[in-house]
Image 1 (tube, rainbow, N blue to C red):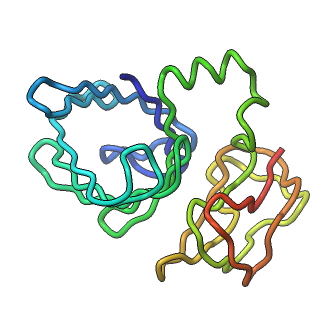
Image 2: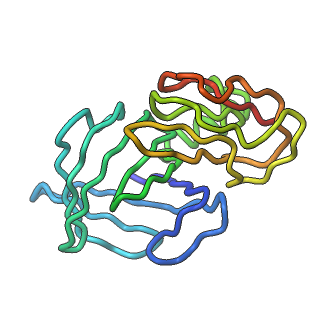
Length: 185
C-alpha cells in the first residue's frame, strides 16, 4: 500500500526536506512476514514489533529493524496526524494512505473535521508557551505552541501557511490529546 508522509520540519534519510514536502512510502507485506518498504524510491528491508498500544494509532512503542539497524519508536496520536519519538527526538508527521488521499480529494478541502488548519495537541500535557497571536501570519513549519508531556517540551508547528484565526488555549493550561490549540485560516 502507498502512503504519503508529510514532515513539516524534519530531515528524511539525511536530507533536509523543504517544509511540507510529501514523501511517498510503499509498504508491501512479504510471505515471510517481513515488510518491504520503499521510501522515496529507495528499497529497505523492514520488520516491526508493536510493543504497546496498537498499530492503528493511539500510541505505543514500536521496535523496528530497517536494513539491519534497530530503531525504537514511540508513536502517539491517531492517523493522519502522529507524533513520533525516535533517538530522543520528537517530530510530527501527516500520514495519509493512497485511499484516504483520494477520498479527501473527492470530498474537498473542508471534509473530515478539524482539518489541517487546526493545530491539535498530539498528547495530553500542559501548555508552556503560545508563540503566536490572533492575526499573525505564519508559514508552514512555523512554531505555534510548546506543550510539555512526559517531562519533554514539544514544539508544535503549523501544517500549513496562513493567518492565525483563533488561539484556544493559554500558557499553564492542561490539555487532553486532540484538544484544539490554534486555528489557521
